[in-house]
Length: 332
Image (cartoon, rainbow, N blue to C red):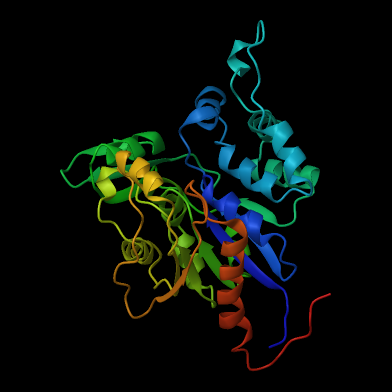
């Protein structure tokens, strides 16, 4: 095997995608591209979207901060929330970073240009791409036939016990042309971890993403979540995640990285009280290779950044480097 730089796309949002990027960014053989969901309707992002008519900046901001040259300092400054100020009460509660990115979008008139400017400002190692710059909301139909609209509402429905039967974006939106072009250079794509129905699935539903993924010659890797998310996901497995993703993108998931670690019994009982259970592997189809590892190493349900990064690199090196017929020169 001869090492070379690999150009990788990472799709998702929420807290899961920054966690993945944070582990991978120290690998000098990876050129990272975060393709971020843009359909957040909650918190500061949702409020800015409604009040200023801008795209929700939160998920993009978190990824940019993770890839920043000085992540700790950037997060400390740009994730701080503004206090209530006389004559500026509407700004209270927003993070400095969300306001900065929203102002840059309004100034430039182009969200992609605003993201690139923020990357340059932070000295990011890697690129951050909004999957689309067209506004839309995630919608869900549940097993009982009821429907709901918005990220917060979809999450709330499944927490109450409604099982998601179908997802779509309203209105239907298209992948940004620059992002579609970037996909052509990806040698592999990693999906997850993150809230399954509201962070991982929405970017896969954007018109053109399916076609862009069809052109990726390397593996599609799914990082399974650690827990189910409410009563509506009771019995849900990593294999179910893979089937949902495969249907959305029109091709099999090649590798599923799943966790074997567990916290203490006391912590499992606390999560069970919130109707959250460890996500079991389930029965994968023959086209999907399971890669099992202890990725849950603390009491809190978070993928261990370092272990996850090593697991991803193991998969990518085996799939993309060890099987190449002609070795290429090591990138400078």
